Length: 231
Image 1 (spheres, rainbow, N blue to C red):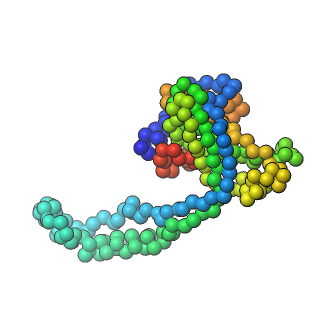
Image 2: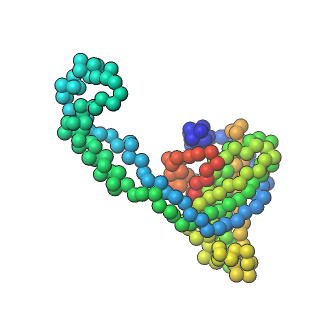
């Protein structure tokens, strides 16, 4: 599933697609909110560490190696007793010890619910959560996200982006329902929508170049269906 989700994103980089830019977004925002949240960062995987090349001991010569291939399960690998074998195990132990354990990261969850009002299924959505100071229209905070989705025509879907960045310097998340204590105007903007048939809708005053660096970084990270990445 990870590969299938990543293919449309890679296809976008390699091949230009047909872009349609009507005034109205084909994805409507049903609801939105921001709240304090946290995420768990798992311990890194050390299985990918490449061990040193095995020494040429008698057990590694062609004849002996072929015989060893038929050994029953549980027979100890003679390479484990060589200097290279012990060094590889020691190196793996050191790497595992240096890898940080799982930890909790505090931040904010930006949640929206959208509806696909188009005739085609939606695969990818670029969107942003905006905060504008009601007392100063020039003060704007933007949190942009990229989501891999599968929304059929007429269907709704909840999306969630996570960020460690504060929503805005003028908003109090703990009292977000109290408009008097939060002089920030919240707004959701859909920047780009990519459909399963290869067509694209994009907001006229937004460009993919705006998030090029963070977009390329997101492509290198693991993806699962329904995941949103910060840009």
